[in-house]
Image (tube, rainbow, N blue to C red; front, side):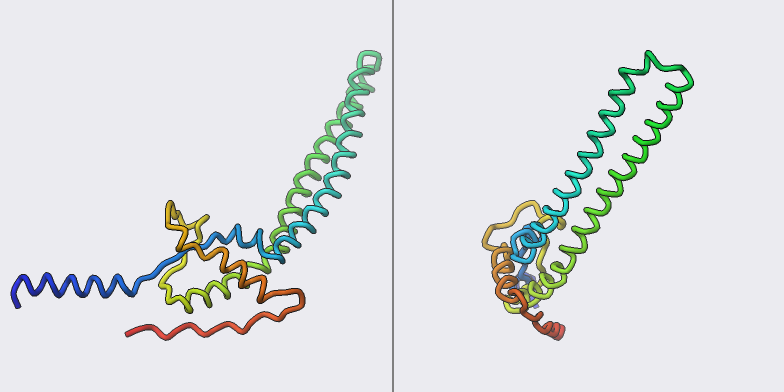
Length: 184
């Protein structure tokens, strides 16, 4: 085989390998936010956060008022009484900060639980889209390091539409499609 034939054969093999590789991308975070189930979860989470935030702010304002009252009265207080009151206020502020951190943790956990049920469903549907389109890989735009790709490779809108039609209120989850057999 001549050098020229080797180059032609390599070019043919290279173009065949490239023809088999197809990739696309999806913005999973956007999909979670835009599917109907995600919107409903966000509304529930926002309502819960608003309720807890109001109670938190009420407690914060009461503590602030107590600190301000102490600051005004401190000059007229006995040193032992002032020291005791200051220690009490420091303890209350520390406990308040602990409750604030607990509230942040609770809200984050609630969000994880609410939205966590959506991700496996999205992955199943994305696998179906990838199989149907003959894709080799699908990248998550937000976590893959994907810097640029043409909009024509974005599957997010299709994934959202498919999710909303598949998982309507009360709809059962589709049976997962089996993975294709590896090509030999």
